[in-house]
Image 1: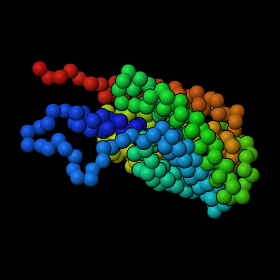
Image 2: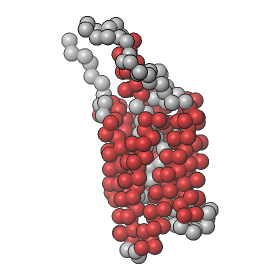
Image 3: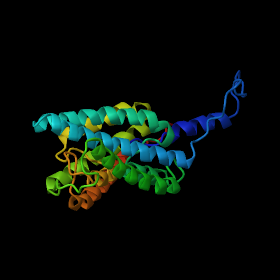
Image 4: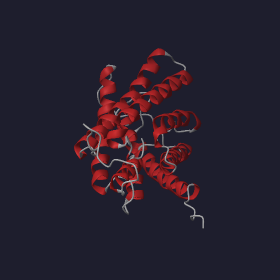
Length: 264
């Protein structure tokens, strides 16, 4: 669920192309290799596998929680705790490959911010990432159901169409985009695994919707009639307000992290 760490690669490239500083050796160290961006197929695989694993964690921990206790508060605590740890691990592992978006809202927001030649995914990468994320989310839900002996595909009956839940999704998604792109603007994406996972864990509790904040995950969770499911009829509205939240988040990034004029 993080922005691609292109800014760091850009700085490395600029450093390599810049005139040699006094006292520095422009030649690479013996045995060193020039860093290369992963091929698109590797990035797509990382997004598919990462999103599948994320949904498997969310759905699987929800099923496990309901089997262990009837206390809804403890069920949500178990579900959110597993998600925090799982998401942090996935971002740490796959971030260097694809940026660990696992989320079409993040991918589209990054494409939008980088469409004029800045850091971000290209239109071609976005066109590959989003389907990979959706397929991965569905596969993750099916996998979780299979692990717990549930029907592999059973449409959820958990209606989430109430207006206050949709407002919760706007807030959750806007906060996520603000966090990710705020970290990028301030050159602190190295904290993304902890920061993003912590935010999602907190948003489970402070938003009425329990913070889906992710169109692909929303689609995947419609395929399971378990604790983490969402009725198919609720999916379009959830995705719509998540995209609205992404726009709000980008607007907040532009406002809060506005670039000032250089000092004269």
